[in-house]
Image (cartoon, rainbow, N blue to C red; front, top):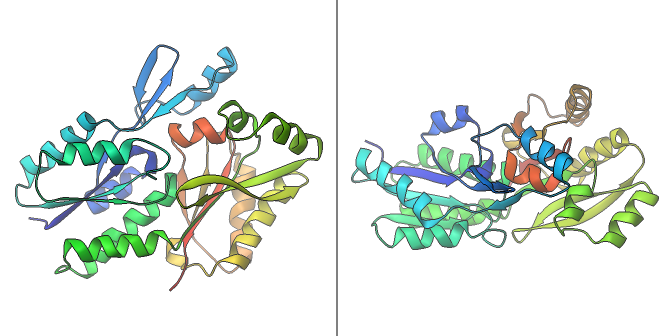
Length: 284
């Protein structure tokens, strides 16, 4: 019987392999396309792009509801009545999921909630690090786990390089002026997590291939990453050639066999097709 169960949202883009390895329970977030609202993870991501191409409208993403959380909590406590749930939430400033979890938790005992200040695979990095911490410290207390999450989230680095700002513009993440300026000057801004917010960061100029290489090289120059936490990947549409280039560039920086992630519909609705991401946790 486990002492702790970790839960998180589907916007973490956590793989089925990791879910099974660490017995993680996932609360669905949602994507609305026209009059249809679907659970994140219940459909292929390419549907997001087809919807935009066909309608010119951006899918709307929404966080988990209190009911979504309650369903998962009841399922866990039915299987493991005496367990403590540690819920590591999608960045609280970007969605209602964190608040929904707090509302749902009022009907239960032994639920502990912490804001990861991360999204997508950055959230997965925090969740997996926490799962390993619990495995290595079986007598740890809930407060010690929360403290661990609050520490590791501040050392988790996520840099995202969109191929186009079109989706970010459509979603109001960049202004028309910024979009036009970047397009005219062949600038490609990276997107990073800062205090839980997705914000534009360093800009690169030139082909996407050149910008991708520079993004990776600068990532390793700026951060001293624990190699066991390195993850690369992106949204649907990232070509095999770009994936190979990314892995080659990672190798040239002395990092081998990185984990790979595949972005789900929530982050893909903002980042657009073919975007690249690199994630890692800095050493202490």
